[in-house]
Image (cartoon, rainbow, N blue to C red; front, side, top):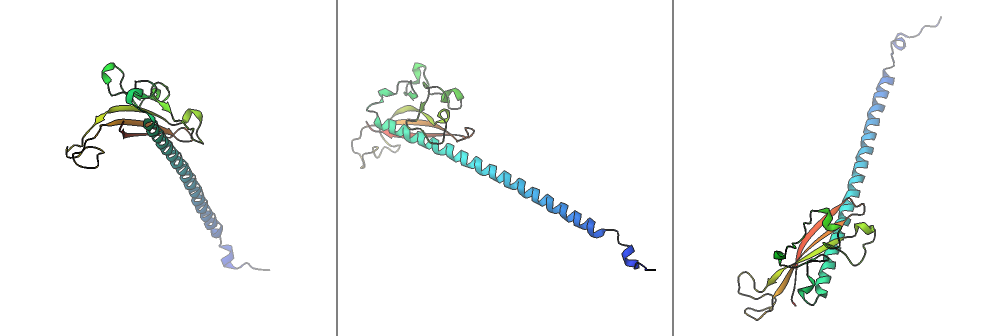
Length: 185
């Protein structure tokens, strides 16, 4: 009769159990890597969308500056079509840029002149301009604005506050930029 050695009879499948535990650990690591990659991909997409929103808001600022440069006087700023004057006593104040209705109405904001590629028609950047007033001298009064030399005669510079809102490609990202722009008429 053939006898089985004593050491073989005592094995209880320890190698199989250890292999299964290692396989389980590798599976968990793999799933974690997939989840991390998915999250990073979403983060990159959101970053791209917010960058598009920022750039479209900047495009609206440039469009507003070009509009101001094309005006011949401040009479265009008559509290209509996104153009507001500095006189708030007439009951028409600059709109609240935090309200959604400000950015959907053609009386309170303007759509930029050239459509931004990649954005839907409803997500085109918008802006409104408020004529703030006239500035003739710097704070220290030693130089006139734009004269280039001390004490020279200078016409006033009309100051405008531009508020622009841009949207991302998904429409979920939004960026509002507010800046000041001056023009001498």
